Structure formats: C-alpha cells, structure tokens
Length: 410
Image (tube, rainbow, N blue to C red; front, side):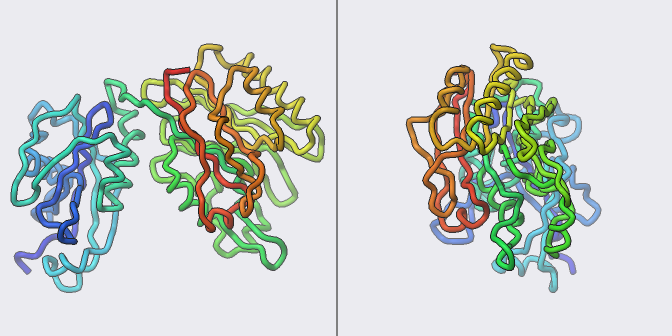
C-alpha cells in the first residue's frame, strides 16, 4: 500500500580517524523529556533502492555531509556487511504495512579525517555532538546502534590511513571453568551466560583460561552445547578469537584463548607443563591496537608452588627470548598464587599492575584470594576491579578481573 514505510533501513556510524563518533538527538523521542541520541538512520525510499545509495542520501539529508557518488568523501563510506533485525516499536508500527513487525537494518561506517560542520534537519534532529566511541556507545538509546559503535575500532583499524588515537587499554582475564558449573546431577551449562558476560565487559582484549576446543562428552550431556569451539562462541561480534591447546583429555581438549577487538597479527604457543598431572601452556599474541603494537601473553600456572616457581622462570626466559625489551607487553591469566610470590617475580621483570587495590577473584561465590592477575610493561596501571552481583558467582568458579592501563606512560 502506498505511503507505508519499507521495513529495511540503514545505520551509518559517522566517525573520525581518532574514533570520535557523531551522534544526533531525535526531535521526537519515545519518552517525553528523555533525549534520544543516535547515529544517522533512515529507511529505503523505494523497494529497489540500494542500501549504499540510501546510506549516502540519509547522511546528506540528516547532517549535510556530502558523501554521495562523485564527491571527495564518496570513498569514505564503507559497508560493514552487518545486518540487524529487530522488532518495530509499537509507537511506530502504524507507519508500516499491516502485519509488518520487524525491520532489517544494514550497517555502514563513514570515516572522516576530523570533525566537520554539521547541518541538521530540524524536522528530524535538534542537536548533535561528537563523542569518543565508548561514550558514544553508552549514550545511544538503541542497543543495535550501541553495538555497531562498539565495533568501530575493529573496522577503523583496517581502513584508517591515519592511526586512531587510543589512550587507554582495557584488559580482562577470566578463567571460565570450561563453560560448565556444578557437580553430578546439579551440573549445568554456563557457556551461553558467559557469552553475554564477555560482551558486557566491553574489553579491548579478553584473556581466557580453561577454554574447551572440543569435548565430546559435554556435547552428549548438554543438548545446547555450542557447535562452535568455545573461544569462537564467546567472541562478541567483530572480535577476533585465537586459541591454543594446553591439555588433551579422554573426551576432548582445552587451553587458553584470547579475544581481541583489534587485529591479531600473530600468535604462538609454548608448553609450560611441569609434570604429567597438569598440562599447562602460554599463548602469545601480537595485537595492533590503533597506533600501538602490543604483545599479550595468556598464562595458566600450576597448582603446586614449586611448579609455579619454575613456570615463572620459564615465562621470564620466553619474554627475554621472544619479545623486544622496548615492546609494550601484557601478561594476564590465572596464576594460582595465594600469596605474593608471583607478583614479586613479575615486578622483577618490569611488569606492573594496579596492585594497590586488592581484588579477590576466587572462589567466585565468596572471593578471598586474587588468583587472577593482569600485569603490563610500558603502560601506566590505572584501575583494577571485578564485577559484582550474584550472577557473576554462578557462571564460573572465578570472577573476571578487569584492568585498565594508560598507553605510552610506562
């Protein structure tokens, strides 16, 4: 029927090379008195209008920024090849044909060298602002819009001719206990909850231990066991997942994994097993975080104190052998140390953490010991904390540890 909106639209994240995002405030919000901030959005004008043409048209109509074909900014528009399908708000459903309940949104990014003048269409928007990408994601009223902005570093890192400026690095280490909790008949699958949890942590780099690559018995016992390896299953959209096996068991294998919002340039593994009863290892990845080349080592040390002493010595030898002394370095994982011996050893290697704050991570239901640690070299520790709440104590026997560092201030 003529006059009905087409249930297909575009979302365009307009951003600078420094990862500043343009947000627009809608003239009409869902709730009176509540600001509704968003990126450029708009429905197709015709059933046969290409998504790309709609994206260029909407950007020009809503901001005055001309990225139409033949203009200098024409090549700055990039199709992110992402589609979101979401229910149409009841308040706006009358604009669509009867029986239409869902809209399909195609996502683009438009990269600018810097901030440019913005000319609003008063009928649609009443204000605009440029915000750092994390703040922009938090300010968005739409969850799909916020998720798209959260992917910006990943896409921008691949296309920027000028490296975006990133001042802080957010690193999480989390022992996920193979995605299963409980004993015997009370055993339950937590990997799906862990997937939501990892996404909420909003980290640049997530270091995981006790990650299943495959486990035939688990797949047999749990009907909702993921078909993907756990590292790939847990990676939020736009993140890259790398995994290396530490232990091979009767029914499968498990090891360390790294999830990165930024491109992973290379990955290595070294066996750190000290005796046959505990198979341990380190995962070493090199990650390009904007203009910074950062080495990340994920470890899971043994339960026996003497083993940990030897494994720390092996870790030190590996770092001296494989990583340039001037390179930025993060070492994170489950160190299984109830005291301060490992911490002192890491300090002796020139690695630091925000250790003025005590953040117990184990056991998760009533944490008393900080078995998990995040250390860094060439960066200034800013903060260290663990998320609180009953749900976090149910997903694993460890809590995730969240560390933030200032880059370039080692």
